[in-house]
Length: 274
Ligand SMILES: [Zn+2]
Image (tube, rainbow, N blue to C red):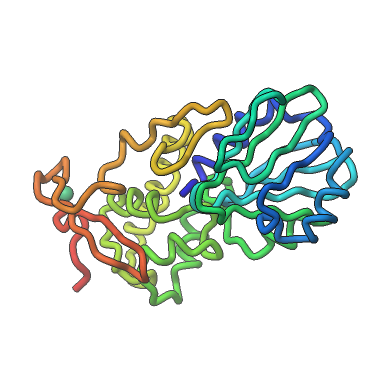
């Protein structure tokens, strides 16, 4: 699923297509994508509004509109936003189309139909409970240490918890823990100061490099122009099959399930908690 680097890439690459444009119409092919308000109100309130700004919070994309409201989009498992000329017929997985006043259209493609949209007066109504943004300057090793302090929960589960830190999902959590040499089942409150600093460095490095690589094209991730990303070519453990070898040790990557999530790690790089 698209995580922080993928959503950041999509947001950055959509800017030149949508900034300053007006939404001239909306076609909803799957009404249940609209979480708030009703699909009918969503359409009537959105049509005619101009797009003032695009931003990202965690895995959510936020479009600020001239009417003062915000359109919030979550791509969930398989969503992508593709820029197409107006004349292009939607393919079968397109669930919504934003028609723009310059003759372009944004196709919300989503094979699994989990993608969601909200039109709200204030972004905090949807994203208000998210944890810190991991690439912002206020996310320091000290902040991470404080958040880990009382958490006797496996670190893999904490990294995927959007209220603990925003934007990281299953694949980047595995990559971060491999880079930080921390076993996914280590409890949050068991990490040493040194390990917390390694973890903090790994979070920022892995996410920054993945943004430079324009995201990881696994499953159904596409950039707005239909192109792919190349972050997955750097993956050491995520999306590998168990049995593939750790590039450092040449021993098989193992798979376990942590709180319902398939988790890949190297048993030598990331020693078992004692
Ligand atoms: Zn290893």
